[in-house]
Image (cartoon, rainbow, N blue to C red; front, side, top):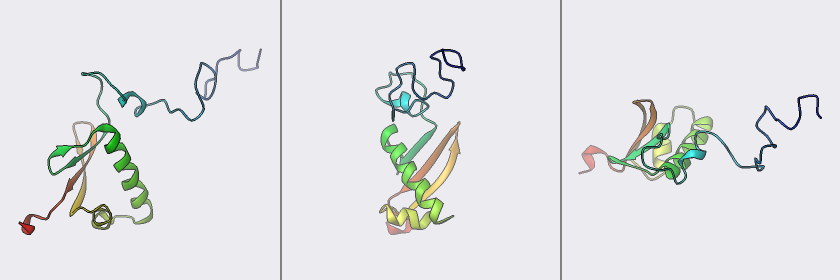
Length: 107
């Protein structure tokens, strides 16, 4: 028996059938989630249409990485992704990136 009290692992790594590299947490519940399941805390809306959870999460990762090295450069990130603008908002408990393909004056 280990000093920590048997096979339990309070740090969430190993034990209990957890495979290395498999994430548990908010993002893990989205894959194949049933209707009525909790929604993701991260969302992306492109021209009024919501991205799927997996695509939104991937987009948020790219956004976060870009912002880490280009602090405050929303226009630069939008351009790097081929969009006119990206604006972060908070909506009903979700962090939402509101993305537009064209500027309003582009007609």
